Image 1 (cartoon, rainbow, N blue to C red):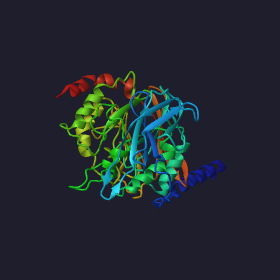
Image 2 (image 1 turned 90 degrees about the vertical axis):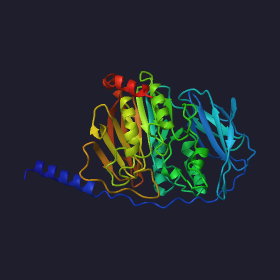
Image 3 (image 1 turned 30 degrees about the horizontal axis):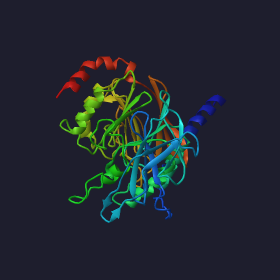
Image 4 (image 1 turned 135 degrees about the vertical axis):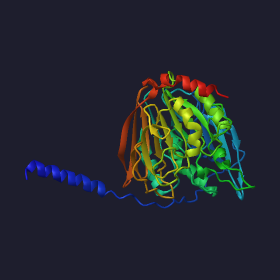
Length: 433
C-alpha cells in the first residue's frame, strides 16, 4: 500500500476513534451552599436586567425589611455621582417568608460603559457593563441551569465569553417549591448576573402551583422582574426588548397563547411596532421547543406553535431559541414542519446543567430540518456581527473545558426578499381582529 494512502487511512481511523471515544458525562450532584452569616441589611443575590432605553434594573435581597431600595452609581470606583430609589416587595410561600426584594431602575446610562454601583447604601461595590449601541453584540445563551456541578462548569465557561447580555429560555433555579433554593441560586449566579444583564423567561420549573393554595410563578415574578411594563405587556411571563439593532421577544410557554389570549394580542401588537431598518434582527425565546427530534417532551410545543408560528413567520423571525429538552439541537430554516428559506432557525439549548440529567434518546431517522443534535451539557454564543450576518456557536462542556462543537453563520432575513414577499401577509395577520 502506498505511504500516502496508509497515512490517509490512519487519519480516518484516528478521527473515527476520537469521535467514538467521546463519552457523555454523567450528572453531577446538586451544589451545597454552606450557611454564611451576613448583616440583615447586607445586599444579596444581586442581578441586573435591561429596563427600557438606556436603563437597567438592579435587583437584590436583604433580610432587613427596612433597608432602603437605593442604588448609588457612577463611572469611577467608589465615586457615585447618581442615586436612584426604587421599590421593594416580599412574599410568603407556605412556611417560607422571603427577604425584602428590591428593584431599582437606574439611568439613563451610556452605551458600552462600565458603571460601579452599590445597593442599599452599604455592602460591596459591584460593577456592570452596559451593552453597545450598535453591532457587534454578543449574547450568551444557556437554559435549564439548575444548581449542579455542571451548572457551575457552564457558568465558568460563560464567564470566559466576552458577552454583553445573557439570554435564558426558562428553568432557572430548579427550586421546585423549595424556596431556599431560589436563594442559593441567586447567590450562585450573582458574580455573572450582577455584571451583565440577564434576560429570562419562565419554564415549567418556575410554575410552583399548589391548587387552591398558591398561584404559579409567584416566586419567579417577585425575584426576576423583567421589562414587561416597558414593552406594553400585562404579564412578567412575556415581554420584549431591543438592544443594539436586535428586537428580542420573550414568549411564555406557560401563559395562555391561543388567539383569544392576552399574550397573542400583545405579540401581534409588538410585532406591528418592529422596525427592521432600526432592528434588522428579530429573535424569539420560548421554553418549550417547537421543533424537537429528541424523544423527550415530544409534542409539548405543538399547541403554541399552531397558534403562533404563522405570526412569527409573517414577521420573518430569524432565530427561535428554546430550552426544556436537556440536550442541544439546531435546525435549518423551517416553517410549518417543512424546510423554508423564509422560516426561522430553531435552536434547543436546555443543557445548562440541570439536576435531571441529559436527554440521550433521539428519534430516528433524523428529520430533514434537523442539522446538528447532541445530548451534552453546554452553552451557546450568538455574535451578531452586523445587520446581515451573525455567528452562532455551541460549546460542549467536555472535561470542564468548553469545546466548540457546532458553529454556523446565520444570514438575517432582512435583506433576503422574504420581508417584501410576506409584507401583505403580515399586514393581514396584524390587522385581523
